[in-house]
Every structure is written in structure tokens, then in C-alpha cells.
Length: 352
Image (spheres, rainbow, N blue to C red):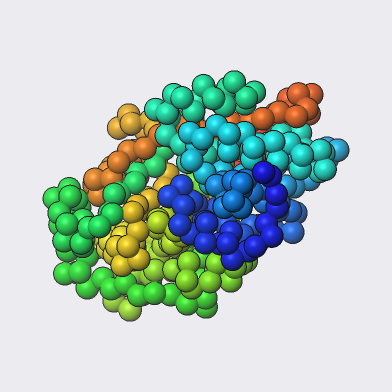
């Protein structure tokens, strides 16, 4: 049976206890998005009224075009091998698409690329799977590191790290680096360092208002700001999100100074400790490049995260269910050009 959310408490409990949950599928994350986005939730229930799957979709008007797009980040939340439930959720999305004049439904589910049965299932349903991107071309990262921490102590988790990673964590402590939890007021300091990082590493940085809204919508129960200090100065920071059975490392920033005292290693360890404290199954380091050539400028990020000995995970990637083939071609090409122009303009402003 397809329905919308009637019992919010039952829905919240489902999200918090399902092993395939994601913070991006929660109602809190939908509130983070700006006023250009609408949110609708589709629920699949069994005959007894128990929730067996959900799909939270974000809908926004496409600028300059007479249509909208629908996106379900890391959705759905269900047993992805349960074809009946998955198909029921997609059927609900089709109904919403008619209501909002959507040209496409975009998914990037929490499904590993090696799941060939799922790939065959979604292809048979009419989904288009996009070509594998090696870097960060998708909306969500296709490649991540995930650390299994289920039922493990801090010592047991630390033991699996590469010896150099353990050394750098301890080095940061010996060099006088301390980590504290930041407040909402500290987001300005974090954002300032994010701008420095974005200019150095050539990526677009979210506004301070975005981080403040995230902090407000998720609340201290689900989001933490970590700040690393050295000699009385904040030199690095991270944002982590706890939801269900996972903690995600979402954003990180570091100043150009004092990088040799290894604050980023200590910050990662403190976030992992939080995940262990919350009895999570997984600590997710989020995105890395899938291009493992050492000449790749992003290889350093891969090497850093690899040192914590998590599982190098490739997801199935983005998949589109197209409602209007004409607008799909027109809008997809236009969006690609727009994103690249925005990135170049941002970098030019940062160099002034």
C-alpha cells in the first residue's frame, strides 16, 4: 500500500532503526534545503500497517524551463532487494511527478556497484544508469570509505588503522593540538576556514547561512561541529552527522598554517569515537576519488582516508527515471554548463 506520512512518530522510528537509513532521507534534512525545494514522502506499508519502505523526494522548479526535477538523495530506505517494495515506492514517485510536472526522478541509492541483481532490476524498470564517474561529478560521491565499528571498542577500532595513521593521531596530541565541540556561534570561524580550503583546493563552498540552517534543523542530537586548536588558534574543523546506525563525516576545513601538526587525523579520531559512543555500525568518511592514479590531484585525500583502513566502497551511482525525454536532454545539458560556469566564477572571485 502506498501512502503519505500519517504517523510521524512511527515514521521517525522506522528511519532511526532501518539498517539502510540515511540522514538525507530524514525530514530534518528536507528542512535544510532552501525555499526553492518542496518535499514529499512516500511510504510503503504491509497489510498490518508496518512501514517496510520510504522515499523522501525533494522537488524544485528548473530555472528558465517549464518543468521540475525530483531528487531522492540516498533513497529509498528499504530492503533494496525487495522488488515489490521498491517498485511500490517508485510508483508513488510517478504519481507525485504528475502532480508537480517533473521531467525526471533522480536516485543515488545506498547500493554497492557489485549488486548486479539490483542493477538488472532497476534497468528492467526503465531507469537509466549514468556512466561511472571517477571523481566528484555526481550529486553525491560515488566512492567512499566506510569503517565497520559494530560492537567494537575504541582500542579495537584504533588497532586496524595503518601504523602511520595511529602515529599521526598521537603526534597531534603531543604537538599540543586539542579538539573541542563547537557551538552555533563557532560556525563563522569554521566557514572562514572552509573558504580558505575551497580556494586552495578549488571547490565551491556553501554559504555560512547554509551551515547555520543545517545546525538549526538537525539540532545538537544529530550534528556536531568539531574544532581543532593549536597555540590558541583554530586551525581545522569538521562537521559530522549522526543518524540511525551511522555517523558521516560531512565537511572538513583546514587553515594553511600548522598543517604539520596533523589536526585532521585527530579530528577524524574524535568523530569516530562519537560513532562508537552512539553504538553505530558504520563510520562513513564520505567521498574520495575513484581514480587511484597517484598523479591524480585528489589522490592525497584517498591516501589520507585509506589510512583508517575502512572499506573502499563504490556505489551504483546516479540513476534517472525519465518522465519527459525532450526536457531531459535540454535540461541536463544546460545544468552541466551552468555548474561549470558557477565553479569557475567562484574560483575567480576567490583569487581576487
